[in-house]
Structure formats: C-alpha cells, structure tokens
Length: 537
Ligand SMILES: [Zn+2]
Ligand SMILES: [Zn+2]
Image 1 (cartoon, protein in one colour):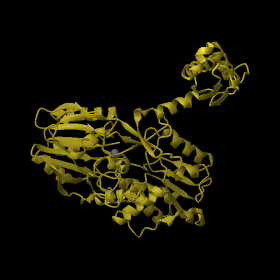
Image 2 (image 1 turned 45 degrees about the horizontal axis):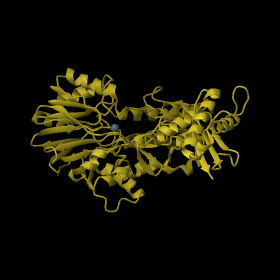
Image 3 (image 1 turned 60 degrees about the vertical axis):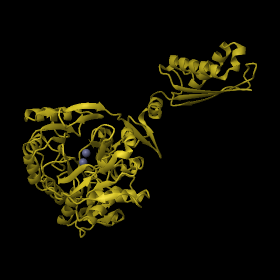
Image 4 (image 1 turned 120 degrees about the vertical axis):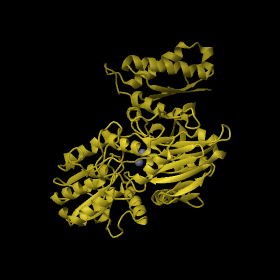
C-alpha cells in the first residue's frame, strides 16, 4: 500500500501534495480482513493544508484507498490521467460517490500547478495503461517521483517510458529521485509485454482443447494479447469475472482496447466447441470468490473445464498468496487439467525495473539525492546500494513514516510521523491496534469457552451452570468430555469462594475464568478464551 506526501513551506505552514493512496489485501494473519488501508492520522491533522491527491496509476496498491479514505481528507481535489480517472469513476459510481467528486483529469505528460507545486506527469511503462511519474518543482528544486515503472519499448498500451523527457530533466538538474525498488535484487533488463503476447499466441494455437487464461484484471495489455491470440487461433473469447469487465470497459472507453475485439459473456462458454474457446478469468492470486478458484472446484455456474483442457497463469504469485494459488492449481491438476505458469513458459513479465533498468534511469536523471521506495526491506536496501555504487551523492534510507528534508541542504530525516494500518472489517474501518483481529487470531488457536452462572444473594447456585465450548477437542486423553471438565471447574471454583464474597459478580467471574482456563490447560495443554457471565439474584 503506497502513499507519499510532498511538502513545501516552513513547519506549521506547510502545504502538501499527496501522491497515491493505496491498499493492500489481508492474508491468513488478519482473519476476516479483506482490505488493509494506510493510517492517515497525519493527513487528517493537516487537512486544511492538503492541496491535491495525485494518482500515478490505477493499481489497487496506489489508488485502492481513495473510496474509503478520501471522505476524511476535507474535500481535497484528486488528479489522474484519463484511464486512471475512468477506473476511479467506475468505483465512485458503484458506491454512489461520483456526484460532485472533485476529480480533475490530466492528460498524459500534462502540466499544472497544484498549490505551491509546479507538477508535470512523465509517461512511464508498467503493467497497466498510463503509469505516470511525477515531476514536482518548487523554487528549491526538482523532485522526480517515478511511481511504478519499467523500461519496455513495446508495452502494448500507453508508453513507452519517456526517455527524452527524463534525460532533459536530468540535464536541467534533479534534486531527488524517489524510485521503485520492487525488482532491485534482480539483474538485467525485464522482457517486454510483447514477448508475452507471442508466447500466449503460440500456446493457444497449439492447445488441443479449451484454454483458460488468468491474469491481473488491470493488465489491459495482457487482456488485449489474449484477445488477439484467441482471434489468431480462430477461437472465441469469453470473459469470466466482474473485475475483468470493469477494466475492459474503462480500456475501451479510453481506446486502450480495440472496441472491435469481441469479448463474450461467460454464459456463451458452454455453447462453444472445446477447440474453439478461450476463457479469460479473474483469480490469478487464488482468491476464493474469484472465477479461477470456483472453476478449480467445479463450482462455477457457467464455466466447466475437463481433463485435457489447459489453464495458463499469466501472472506472478504475490508473496502471501502462495498457498491459495497452490490450492487452485492442485484442484485443476486433480481434474487432469494442464496448468502452465511462468515457470513453464514466458507467460508473464513484471512491471517493475530490474537493476539494468534502474542503472539506465540513474544515468538519464543524475539526481543529487536518491530515495528508494516501493519494496520490502531487502529490495529497498539493494536499491540503496545500487544508487551508492552509481555515485549518487546522498542516498536516504527512508522507511514508513520518515519525513525527509530534500532542500535546502542538508538532506536529513527530520521527523517521524505516525503511520500504521487500518482494517476494513466488514462495513467498519478500525485501527490495527483496536484488537479484534488479534482476538480472532487467538480464538483460531485456542477456541473459546462461555459460562453462565445464576447465584442467589446467599451465594447458592439457583440453576446448573450453563457452558458452551467452541473449537475445543471433544474429550481429553482419558475420554472425559471437556464439557464435564469445564462444569466441574466452575462448581469447584465457586465452592472455594467464601459465601459472603460470592455477592460480587466481578470477583466470581474472574475466579471462574481463571479456574476454567487452568483446568482446561491441565487436560489440553492450551488455555481457551473464556467469558463468564454471572447473575446474582
Ligand atoms: Zn503498479
Ligand atoms: Zn505498486
């Protein structure tokens, strides 16, 4: 999840430009959480000084948080190029926020003033149309924020990366380059999107029966390549999954997909002969509700594959999704369906620069300061070392929350602002520290016991204690039911409390909770979460 903040002016009177506002997806470690958002406490405090939110491209890790968090930003205007704007509009419309939303469309390579900043977009290449780097100029200097990028002479959508403009900016003098680190541990230059198109066509032509291709829904170039490969192989293309439709619509609206390419609805699938169909599916990351997972389980209402069919994963497995993807791939293999990934053939390329590409960018831009961004610790560090080796004067190792002074000199990390994560939990957005997710994780390991007691004011049981066990084994190693163990612990604990003190429900509740956890622990070796409700009549 990416969001960067550029400020100009003295402390207390500083104006800000936000670049990107993205999300990340929850994993097994955040049970019940699909979407994780950045904690924007700092932005909320600075609300009156926010001059604009500029979106570099329409990947979820860069623009996915706008819908949830923009309402907290005091009506700040949002700037984006036509394709990114079109993707945002479709989301805004879905939640009824489009009316009156201050969305300003900027052309590719466009310039404008936002607050104290002179802003220029630089066309880059990436795995989605219209990735834009941002040049931020003030009288103190010029900063280039690359966004996500790679070098690709044949990106098959917008682009390629505007080398001439980057060189010209480098000649004029760049104070700081804030640059993508995702592939900074990989040597060489990444292959082109056009190479993937060639491979896909070969594979689809050679396939004897049905072919399904799954890829990132936002990869318009890839969608176009699959459509063209299907046409070249004399096959019809059906689209499976809602997210894919949204992108196809936005791409046709902005002319990144040929409106004459026929994309058929998934209901057509079963009417087409096995050797004449290609299905383009969502779910390359093994997402449980997406098309591919449902097809793998034989549960998709419209699309069914058989032995001898072929599924191509034209994607990379994002770290954290390995298990989910393996589950889907194994499900397909178990049915005799051939599974092809980028391990078997060059059916995917990354959208991020390898070391060779980073070297080229540094040679064009010659910045005084380098700040690696976008990557895990090891990627950021590899990028920092590379920049040092390339002779960049100042390399700043900034981590989340670091506030860096770029100009005037000296360059330094001058402050730490609060950062963190927010969870989208059902319809509610909560702070990571609120604890419910930690509690759920705990419940997942140890289960829970609930106890209800009714005592008289003399401290006698007015009814048998009620207990409810969730997620515990049925019996201990001797065959004693855990329910019995819990009941005996409850009665034993209450009996051990002197009668006059039993009038205090909090005291009874806490004693019973401890007693139950200790008794279960002795039999099981684990302490469940335990809630005790005490009523004194
Ligand atoms: Zn991206
Ligand atoms: Zn990204």
